[in-house]
Amino acid sequence: MARTFRLPHSLQSRIGPLLRRRSRRQARCCTALSNQPALEAAVADLSRQLRAGGQSGSADLALVFCSTAYATDLQRLLPLLREAIPSRHWIGCAGGGVVGTDAQGQPHELEHQPGISVSLLQLPGSELQLFHLEAGGLPDLDGPSQQWIDWVGAQPDEAHSMLLFIDPGCPAINDLISGLDYAYPQAAKVGGIAGQHNASHGSLLLDDQVVEGAVGCLISGAWRIDPVVAQGCRPIGPVFEVEKAERNVVQRLSDGDHQGTPVACLQAILEQLNPEERELVRHSLFLGVAKSSFQLSSSDTPDDAAFLVRNLIGVDPRTGSVAVGERLRVGQRVQFQLRDANASRQEQRQLLSSQRRRQPEPLAALLFACLGRGEGLYGQPDGDVSACREQFDHVPVAGAFCNGEIGPVAGATHLHGYTASWGFLVPNHPPADSPAS
Image (tube, rainbow, N blue to C red; front, side, top):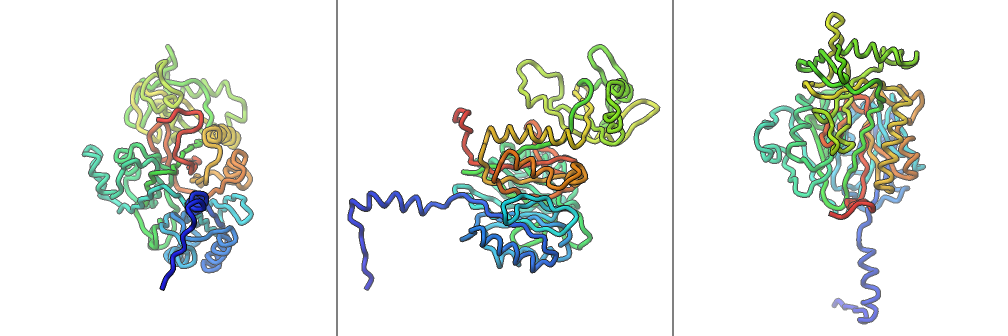
């Protein structure tokens, strides 16, 4: 016969709140990083690191990023991990390189070598909706947004963040991103295009499967992702207005009362550059396209002045026109941009410093970086994660090197190149210096 023991009422009043506090799950991020070339050895290494790091119980979400060196074994990866590590949901992708945090708590960028990064997240008070989108057959962008919501199968109510990974073979990627913005306008989207490989399956990881198309996680509730997009460029010359353009070909620009072809405008800028900058123009020149279509007014915010950096993909020496990786319209503002290691470091430090002032203690940081960054840009390893560690002493970092990075610029989500797209997991409440809504 069972016996029931009851505490005296006086002790219940004292101990009850303590027991309730202890029973509450605490938000936590536990990470591991392995570069073991054999898959089984890598999974055993990851499991050992997570246990040593204090991982216990089942996580809400496991983020898995692996290098394409494991492509032929990719279909075995999640079953092995799920057998060794408990988590409710699993999502991730293969990449051209891996970002992760080792057993000593140091973040690293593993390029041109095997690597698997696992981050276990406990997010009490948050709702997670994972989804898989088949390649092709997108709903109509001119139709009702509910068609997109029904297609995705995740409800937008109070959703404020989205992780998004897309297979490199997925068609109409820009339309897909635009459609998700249309259906989930309040959700900040961060992620990337997965790495390419020669195996017969996709590059995306979801629960226990390897899939193609796109996968995502919609987040609502107590935790959110703050996006930070570092495009790594610095402007040169004045801000021009597009006077004549056809689709993605810019034919004439103006600066005040002065007009000319883009090539003529660039030649005038070259005269003011030093020899090192002129050399950069030969291989690191881009065009920044203003987010707002026309001239700023005195009431516009700084975000309205944000430039979306796009490739210059061709020059017509006969007409002086340039082709840009973005459709342009008359009246839009543009500015030539240079990309180099110093510009990238400076811009990223400023952006991450601003993020630290807004939210000084993130639970985790996610980095989706272009394959053209890393040692190729900085001349040394761990360039981007080191910039993060300068601002956030102990935050675990995870992510991948991508074939295109996903992140917002001035309120709209874009597919980028040469960019570091960051996502900081922070409590979903107004910063201390912001009024509550």
